[in-house]
Length: 365
Image (tube, one colour):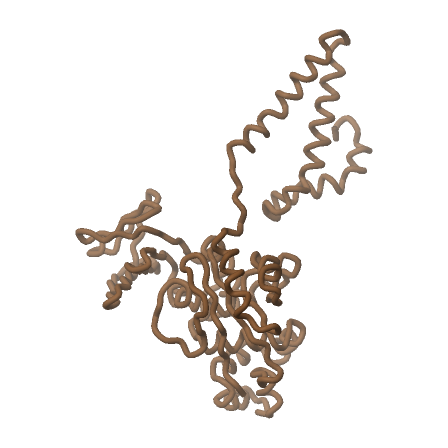
């Protein structure tokens, strides 16, 4: 079409540019390619139809040609099943947690859950599909290993709002803010002084909102985090102590231990004596394997590994292959493995590995 009529291509330029979005921005933009494909197929059919001599068979040949052009797309759609991103367990979890949330509370969850949480709980969320500006702030508290920092950060952000938080980062810098929130309101006075700031009462109250200025925060975790960990942990690690790189993040189920080997689904084997993992036709030398059993936790340490950790729970019957920062993160500690009592997080709903909801308990100023 472009070779035959360049002026028409200029007019259709916006349609063509939108049609390229799925290749640049992901499948969520696939709907914009429909006009481009439709115009292209329509022009192709019209051009070929004009070459078929008029007559009683003209309509038949054009119909056959249309079926020939469209059939590959129909076959591809028929072979593929795109299930809804929300599972029944996640929706049921949202309905269960709704009566447990105070009216002025904020639900902290990944943006995919935003609209659904607002609909089923009637509560505010930290972000959604229409408010996806700085994904690093959302993932950050799940990437750090310090639960006090995670809880205080979530309360600070939810209570002060995006604009005031951005202003604070520009004025104080991320290093001071993260050290301050990790220290708590009392020790935070020393942090302010160390960075050359006057430890004023209003500054402490700004970062640690008083009860009358604080919005209750609830952390909602579900299966979406398992399938998007490659991205959200990378976003959050930009602000955390972990490295700025995409992590290894793979979940396994039906873990079995027999004769010094671990197996599970998807198919893998780990030799507990050597720490070598066979998965998808490749060998991986692990740094550590952690076996969490009801009676104890057993650690297998290996030298010369690639920085990977495999952690599994014999009671919950699932495991996680991940980079070291993921293994030590708050997400791993909260969602996957029970690592004792938490001072700043209280579990109020659990259906692991489908959904969890935690009440965030930050420090009071």
